[in-house]
Image 1 (cartoon, helix red, strand yellow):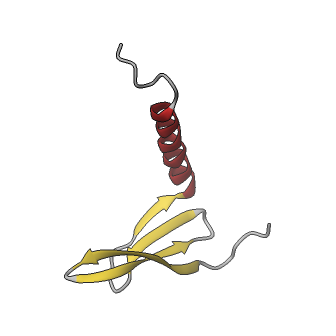
Image 2 (cartoon, helix red, strand yellow; image 1 turned 120 degrees about the vertical axis):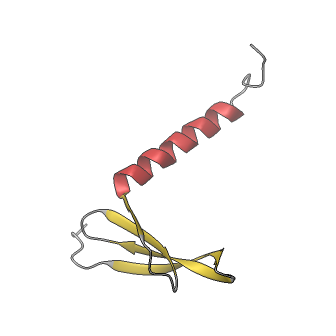
Amino acid sequence: MNARKTPARTISNEAIRYRAKLRPICVTMYPSGRIGLRLKGARLEVSVDARTIYDVGMKIRVASLKQNAPGSSRRK
């Protein structure tokens, strides 16, 4: 894969109510490996490192697998 030189922007299908309007989430991928999230029409952008998003996603997946594992409903 080639390294990205310009930010790539997209608008998701998910919407969040903000200031009495449903606003879609705008996602921006920066060349430095950061991902920016903001609501369409809003100025505030939250920027997160891609590695952090991956780590949190994996922790959620592992927790979900542990919760749904056979025998996990036993009382200790």
